[in-house]
Length: 79
Image 1 (spheres, one colour):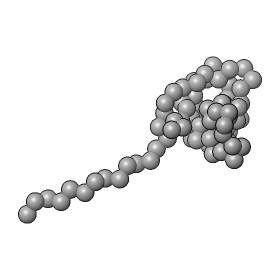
Image 2 (image 1 turned 90 degrees about the vertical axis):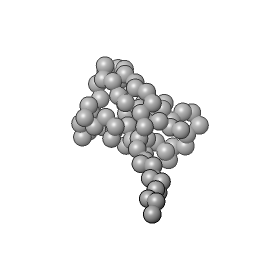
Image 3 (image 1 turned 60 degrees about the horizontal axis):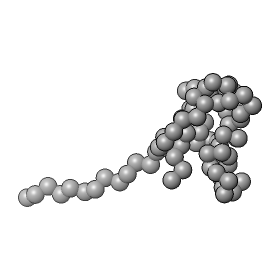
């Protein structure tokens, strides 16, 4: 009897396309807005902030407001 091979469903992750370096005056909210682009609705912003924070929790820590100039952050894909 031949083995039955079933396709494995894809695992959804936050794919990282690029990185960005925090500049003086940057906030995670501003970086998220820039990453989403000018056509993004305001409702998408909190989720994008959370995605960026989750990808960079090892660099930022638990407080998303504590980012510093020079930090390199991984940015999620928005495809």
